[in-house]
Length: 132
Image (cartoon, rainbow, N blue to C red; front, side, top):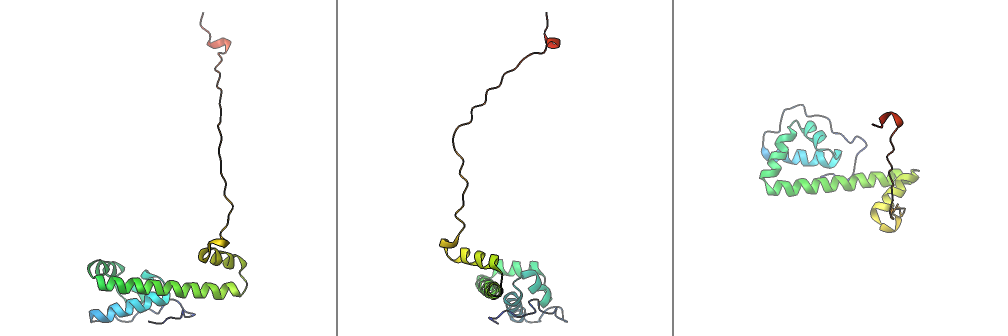
């Protein structure tokens, strides 16, 4: 699997329907997940239904482990890209990334409300409502 995110993060859709061998489509989907960080885009690129991939994940523990590893690697690629962009001038992105990685950078502002609220309600009758 490619560990670096490419400039074109969505692979081109496959010209064929599905790879013929089960192992071939599985590897192709895993590689595409790493590259584009989207299960739907990966399935579209490989030419296989997203539902089928989720069914196989549910039935095959080994494929589920491999799929989770691909998702983890895609997250690392996204983080790498975010850090690259943050270094080029996005202060807000730098703040966000620091806060996610180290609790010392989290926004400490909290709103705490406490105390009692007393409400007194009085009902009055208008003269028109009075019955004699």
